Length: 266
Length: 209
Ligand SMILES: Nc1ncnc2c1ncn2[C@@H]1O[C@H](COP(=O)(O)OP(=O)(O)OP(=O)(O)O)[C@@H](O)[C@H]1O
Ligand SMILES: [Mg+2]
Image (cartoon, rainbow over all chains, first blue to last red; front, side):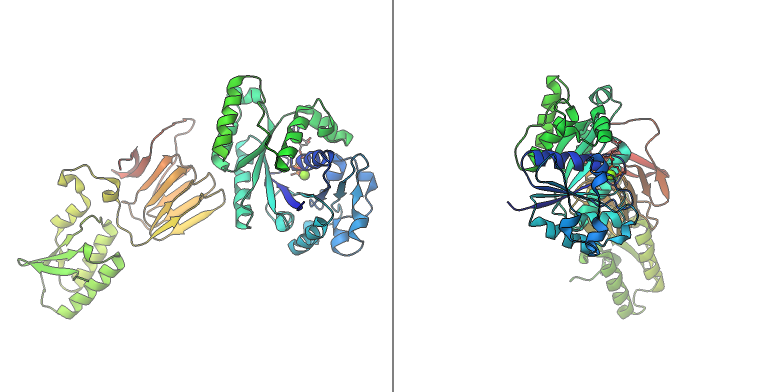
């Protein structure tokens, strides 16, 4: 299989990039794929924490690009899932410690050993963002149903297009269907109308995410978690499987709306 | 190419159809007047606009060229060039557009943080999203949803128009006039609309094509 480098990005901070990278990566590994997660949020690393791997870090991404160690030495194998690895960010340096060119070489080197290379992008549109997208084949844009998050996602999609990444797909995170119903939260249609990119999935607001993040066990490992289930479906879509958009609610009319949406998103 | 300045029955006329662009018209006019010397001195000149409409600024420019050669613009005819109401039929959008030389065609949506500037007209085959900006010396036409900021007639042309398939800008400017949607009101209009200056104010009306 040809390997894919996917960057998970958003513009706005705190909307769920790291959560998405950890859960999508774990879900893909659960499906038997070989996956490496790259934390490019240098100076603010936390993908290792979300995965519960912090205490195993010896080398980091900056050591690798500066040839302080071999790439294989820096990769941390997740014992729970065969085929899941993490390349952690450095905590004590800043984003200029790595260049886009180095990132491109790094992701290319990883292609030979992995099916999916997921890059967790830092917030913002500066050097950290340019590093993260440098080696990517495609982008996954994460947005929450808020005007400011959608605005930043739109900006990011424009910048991705300018960098030649034209097939970005959207994950809407932290949707609360009750609030949408009351008209207190942007609905999916409104968001897609503005962003006009394909929808990869919708992840509901779920406190299991917070609990599992603190425990270092991604929510996809939790069968009962609704967000975890959403990420498992997203992982199947990433592999190319056609998975219908689930209704977040039980009423039929929402299902119909999703069907319409799917057509719109084509 | 036929001459810009013609005289028939002792009346002199500028024929706007003779050239493609306004710049060409000005050049040709200047050229013709120079070679004619003071042959036409003191005469009045009218403008045959055809389907083109001149902005007041462009009329002024023609006036300047004419007076430089001892001629003047006949005002009754110049009125007709902007006042189509007198011709009796309901004017279409294209007849109302002030005339600009260049039109830029943008074949994509503008996203937040993206900006377009043209000296002439701009036509956007896509949306203008919130956080995007379109600035034009002439008219602005958006074939999708206009949700960002637009500024038409940026060099001061009050006659410039903004038209959109769905007009709901964050802010809309024409020449030195600035408007924004009323606070707290959500107006959902499901038809193409047109914004222009009428009586010193930006007015929004249904677009007739
Ligand atoms: N679907 C969800 N339901 C509940 N909480 C969530 C959900 N997704 C993310 N969160 C919480 O939101 C917070 C921010 O998430 P996360 O760290 O993944 O965002 P980020 O985009 O990586 O942030 P940064 O820009 O700082 O890197 C975390 O505390 C996380 O637990
Ligand atoms: Mg993060």
